Image (tube, rainbow, N blue to C red; front, side):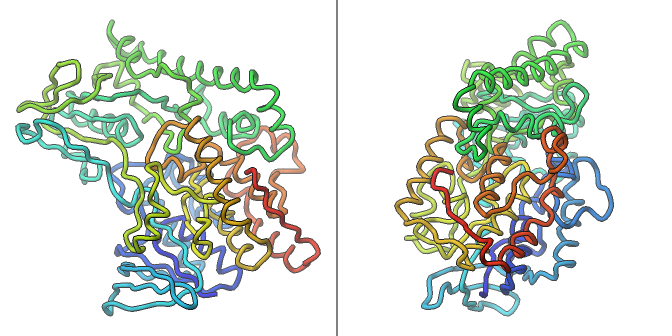
Amino acid sequence: MKIGVIGAGISAIAFARVLKRFSHEVIIFEKADCIGGIWAQAYPEVRLQNSYEQYHLSDLGWPEQPDQHPTARQILDYMNMAVSIYKLDVRLQHEVLSLNRSASGWSMLVNGEHGEERFDFDFVVVSIGQYNEGKHRPEFAGEDDFAGTIITERDVKSLEQFRDQRVAVVGFGKSAVDMASFAARKTKAVTHVFRTPRWLIPFHPLGVHYSRLLFARASTVFMPCWVHSGGAERWIHTRAGFVVRRFWKLIEGIVRRHISAHAKYGDENAKARLACVTPAHDFERDMRSATAMAPIDYFKQIATGDIEPHHQNLKGFNASGLVLEDGSELEADTVVLSVGSKTPSFPFFDDEIRELIERENDGLQLYRHLIHPDIPDLAFAGYNHGFLHIPTAEIGALWIGAMLEGDFKLPSAPLMHASIDRIRDWKRAHVQYEPSRSCAVSTRFQQYLDAMLRELGISPFRKLPNVFAEFGARYGAADYAGVVDEYLAKRNNQSALDIQLSLDM
């Protein structure tokens, strides 16, 4: 087939690489002048929350060991290397203007170096990212009276912008805590305003890297999810729920002690400031699509007072700064509104398709996080985002490749919608709201990968026969190397293929 891919982030690269293995012709269109997606727009000094072992194409490791948590520049260099090695056809500065159904598939109008061109494709993959619409920017009363500057983190091009400023950061996601911590390095007057504190995962709780503690099967087996494909794991969650709850209370206690231990760096008010940023709700509920790591110095900066926390809603502005809901006022020169991203939108589709895929305020509702039941000749890459993001993209692409080969038959549209509805309802009951809540498998990556691989007839236990490693060692991207080869080998022996889609995943 001839397949068009919209967007050139890491998910698009993973999809193109896998679909080429099925001998499809794949062309990637990127409207920017470089590849990288969100990493090409990253704010200064942002780093990958995952470690580098978890973030690479399964069969292509880093050429040289990067930082434990790579910088945006290191990630972009890796992506460019992958495009070169795999000889992917990436067309930069090619903006997709419209995508419409044609007699043979899809007709794509693209504005490129030679003006507007039309391309015809049998199948299309949309990979423009969860955060393509930019930052949510609410308006507040009194903004016109404020003498300072109001920005979002996307407007921060250099941390020198914070030099000698009185900085206020609003929000409590990854970007917000990064901004507060980064600003505190440049100025001593940083206030952090937030409606609800979230559990931030320390990089080294108990002196061990968090991924070794939380992302081995010994831990992921306790992750509540909409699917548990293994019998033992299903039994734990259906018959031994008290064990699951105690496990997460144990993790919560470890993180809580990690936070409170920073009081030793501060004055007599340090405990109160640390308590202000410690959530009252259960740790387990914050295993969200955008679960955030704690910046290395954040809790120390809270303890020392370099960051002054305020657990309040922002009500508005006056001439000198912020007005909080309790009536208190905070002086500021620069205010960073870091209150989340907009729900993904897809302006190149016609109104009928946009209505199908944009109707929910918490993101795309997709079957297997990959396709819409009413548009089965269109896939979405990167909307099964999780801790092992690149392997989930690769396995998603493998599933799409198998579908295109006719190795299995999709259920009827009503049955696929029923599956989507069940997962949507589960997420809304168990996962905190975010505009991208439905676009992620988040910390449920192991359950998703296991279920998808079982469905394709591939063993999800990638570390066997070493039982101790399978249960006790963290999973990395390299553990999924060879999965595509294994599936293609099974295809060569048609009798080995017996794919039945399970409707309850």
